[in-house]
Length: 261
Image (cartoon, rainbow, N blue to C red; front, top):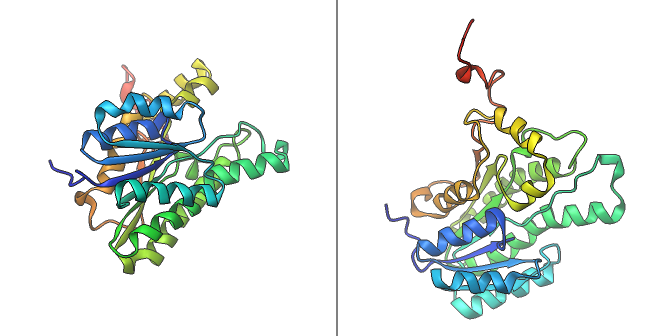
């Protein structure tokens, strides 16, 4: 199926690892021209590794700072002459209880998870308002299922992104700009592997109907769908990709050898 993404210019924030990197690769495979940013120091090394897949550029950007995001967008436009799709993927997780966050830590999480979506959408709009385009926000299952006692700011901010998606969709619709959102469940990113114990990963997997964590590519491909012609009548929409996490009261039922009612 032709997704209509060939030669489209796609911007992805937080694109040097995890879901972002997987998304960069999937767009390149479709023939898109991809620009990605990250705060990671190894971003240029990642870019070099991707050049065999297609046209790609990168820039180190702090997405919590509007001037850096706008500058990145300007450089993308100068190189490729257009911006057709913008994926607000950048974010962070603070593994603390709510009452343990300092002012500085709150500012950091809010900047990376929420302000980044505002600035990214604003930057995208500047280059899409005369021709249309697609903005895709990456939320989280934590927007629906809160996480008490750990990373407690993450869920509320991701929930705000879901609402912000609909807000921007309403503001940008007259300019033929679609704004949608993807809500991933637990995904085997480097951040997940480094921060969550093997026992907890197993517990999370067992609470999911598909009995496993998602691979980053399994989140990237629905993002491609939302960017494609196949989703041309979709806007103000949030799609959950969680493997059925927390959707039934007894997720182990189908896997039990001796079932009883």
